[in-house]
Amino acid sequence: MTDHTTSIGEVPQPHFPHDSAALTAWLTALVRNREYGSLAELRRPGVRTNAHIRAGWHGGEEHRDLFERMAFLFAVYHQGHRTPSYGRGSLGAAARRIGDGTGRGPDNPGAQRLLDRVVASRRVPWRHLQHAVIRLRSCEQPPPLWTGLTDDLIRWNDRTARVAYQWSVDFHTPPSRDRSAPNEPTTRKDTTP
Image (cartoon, rainbow, N blue to C red; front, side, top):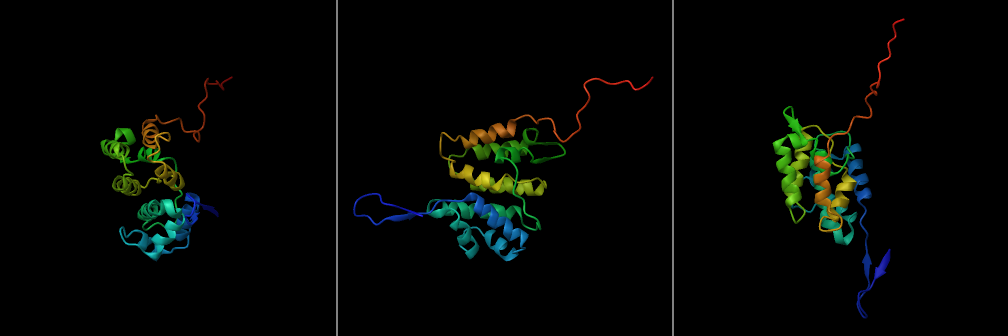
């Protein structure tokens, strides 16, 4: 731990760095260990429970509130789940999976409106993020990568990071060919003699 002093005569303040990977590890352990009481505490917004305080430890002094809110989103997604999901991709890539039989992502007007509200916000759009997590859960789709989402939200107001823009790009990127599917032959071999 490093002490920082801002000017002569001031008391050194300890600097507590944030650790989004440790937050994700702790949260997934709650699901794996079936600590449903702690997960239920995390789903209580606006109430500072022991579980919220523990989540905030991983954010350090500067990001305590953000880490507590991330724990809330995680707990909302995992309500009733027995296995933890670490997530996949950015929020934009995850929003691409929102939808139903009529279309997903950019082909789904609801998913498009939701992403538009998220990326248009100047402040971290907690209410819209909660809605996105609930929609992903209801569509039985993986959430965004929790560690990446936390890091993105820390940099939300950093103009050089361009988080909202990158989420939009990820949302609108055309689907790539599934690499797990067998390759189609480029020419057909005739096996008849």
